[in-house]
Image 1 (cartoon, rainbow, N blue to C red):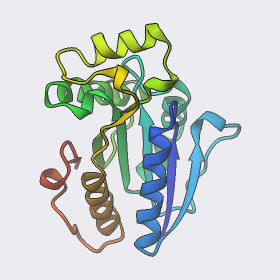
Image 2: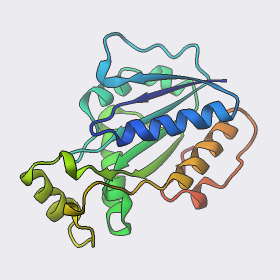
Image 3: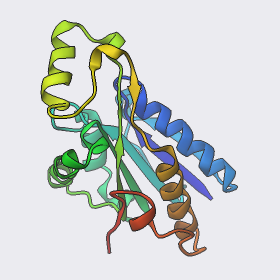
Length: 195
């Protein structure tokens, strides 16, 4: 089965997530095509794919505009295949931030008109070695407010790779007609099925 992964990445964590997802597709015996929404130069046609996985980070309360535009202009094609949306944010890393992380995804769905078959809130990473003083302060005092993480300690990854693997494997099995291998609701925090 052919899977297209549509993504955009700012600091590199979403790209790492997409690479792991592509490995899972290959491990399941499928072929995969990657489409970077930030490099979009022509409309995307999905008529030769069996399923689509979308992945994008949240910065300043929203997913990238190019990514959202691509999703909004591909609604008909996306509705024709099983879809999994991976929303990557730092807020998803902490229980007290998960509602806000879900709000970011819900706002994207309202802006684009897209409702994925499945969605997963994926915890991102801090790449503080790339931040200037102002950016470090924003991350520490706004994004990590009341969280015991010191940005000055250097880069830190919060992605739950096992939950991501289980969610992707379950989606791939279900999308290929093999039924659900795992209960996505319980195995991957934040993954929900939409009917």
